[in-house]
Image (tube, rainbow, N blue to C red; front, side, top):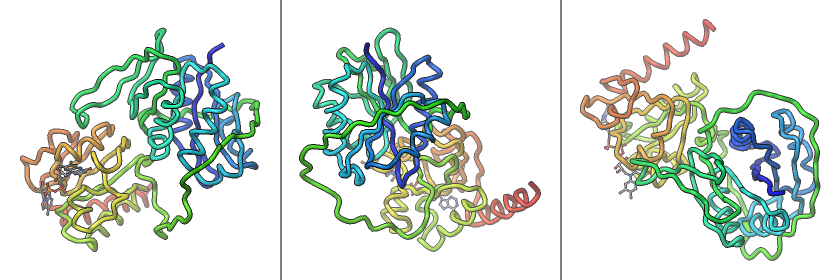
Length: 321
Ligand SMILES: Cc1cc2nc3c(=O)[nH]c(=O)nc-3n(C[C@H](O)[C@H](O)[C@H](O)COP(=O)(O)OP(=O)(O)OC[C@H]3O[C@@H](n4cnc5c(N)ncnc54)[C@H](O)[C@@H]3O)c2cc1C
């Protein structure tokens, strides 16, 4: 019988939110996917995390080489396992990793791939929707060959409520094959940042911030909101923010519940990365700035006056709650 497989993602022994979001949406559509996790041996606690959300079937694809992510290791191990299972669909998050290994997996199966989808359904064939032309429109894609392989943008679907179940684990020796390139060193930035693509609230700054030092205004406001801080490309190019904070066509794609754009004009390339945000608030001193066309709430004014006021008010609200 053909089966739907969801490839889970994890980091530092924790599941990525997108995995449970996708499981929740599949379950809502009446699917019972098998969640497959490429892991080094000894990661059984991930299965318990999944079981809390209602995942009954988990496959741990184990190999010591999988302690370190590599596109080849993941694609080889996943293909060796999944090619024996006649899957109807293989789904993963459209994360940095998903964008890296999933096309390789599709190539091994000899089928097409749809990336960065924002909707999916099966009726009876798998059909997905994905944004086109930097989000100006979207297209529906039907898969003509099996398996349907696609990645889905994080934060598009809500996290499902807890629904604890008894988990069944299948442990399989991962066949990673030969890996021609591997990461030899990771230099962490030192700060513990909320990952932009997983954040529920993002406050982003643009060229108008004028300096890296002024980004402190955003960080202070973000601290009261539990938000992640993002930036426009102009701010990144000017050296005010690091590239991992860039939102947009050549940066990260985000879909938070709340996106606050401060001193960002709203260029199409920026909108491409945040247009699926649920609520957008814009602060800009130019009432004609294009960002106001996308914003649900807009404040026309100087961010250097408004941001400290906003932070103060948020602190007051927080102390009352
Ligand atoms: C191929 C390509 C890819 C690109 N990819 C990206 C991408 O991934 N992400 C991205 O962001 N851009 C991207 N860009 C760049 C994009 O076109 C814009 O240049 C960029 O988004 C502009 O950044 P900005 O809004 O910060 O700056 P600006 O366009 O200069 O806007 C600054 C805004 O701040 C307002 N402002 C000024 N002072 C204040 C103040 N004191 N208070 C309040 N408001 C104030 C101004 O009114 C203005 O609207 C890309 C461009 C190309 C060609």
